[in-house]
Length: 384
Image (cartoon, rainbow, N blue to C red; front, side):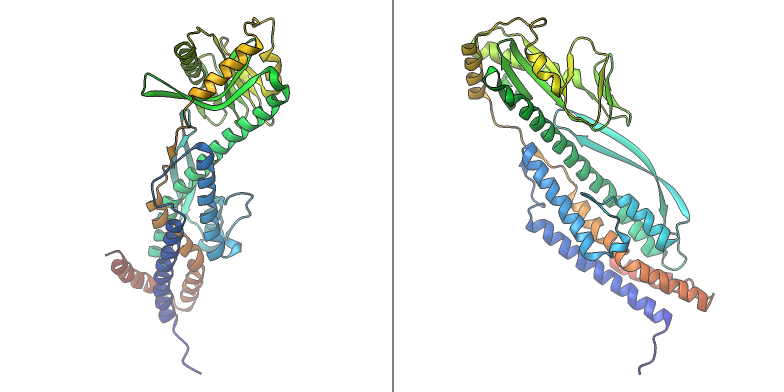
């Protein structure tokens, strides 16, 4: 039998392996993103953007599943909660002892406006005596990875909820039949360079309705200034959105049909698990089960169109609408390629290094800085 390696030699060998594994992980991850077209800048409709974002999340999550022990990953329905993964790893492996405040600002793009969410959470940073460099390397990777991943997941969820909300309302209204005409995701141009995209337009004998669809998961409130807000601080000027659609559609109809139509704004809440309240008195807000009754409310609206008028307006609006606007995914792919493999490498290899470090400390109290010295040399070579 060969001579058993010293702990110092074993530590040095494992540290060298760490960087080899990290580089190989980065090569595989980068190639996978390239193969799936994520290194090219492309533009997508909302439907296609949801599919692409979901595909990117699946690639990332599968990469973790294939390279990290399941005991370090938490159960998931759709996507991993990487903050919980990090916290558990520190608790079970790294013995967290340095608390940090990590402020994370994520920009959410919902298609019709921008929502900014600022969240401050507690993290715990590695503070080992002997493998501090690798601990810091993993922490820095996590710190870069987490906001990127969170932004992808939030953007996918926002777009998906919007699409699901539109589908739910359409399915609710189509049972009315020929009494109404429905146009979804219609985009119209005014003055050549200004276009507006409508969630849904409904035409009935009682008028033309521009419907703004909301599918937020938390109870929300429209205040007297017209802002839709929830308890987490998410806020959007929903009245401005609604009236922008109304005025755009009125101008389009006047220009194309020489008809001074009055378009009625209607905000429809389509999430059955949450509620909306309203203090803005000039725009009607209702649950999606109440929409049918609103569209035919003879006490509120006059019956101004014949069925032939309804069909004619519908055909013209269908004829002149332009394709949906396409958007860049706006994802930091380079940051993802840089940080993901480093984070995975830490989850994959640091547990063994921690055990070696513990054994060295138990064997000889004079050894705690040996691995640190080795890693300092390796890091200087790797990053130079």
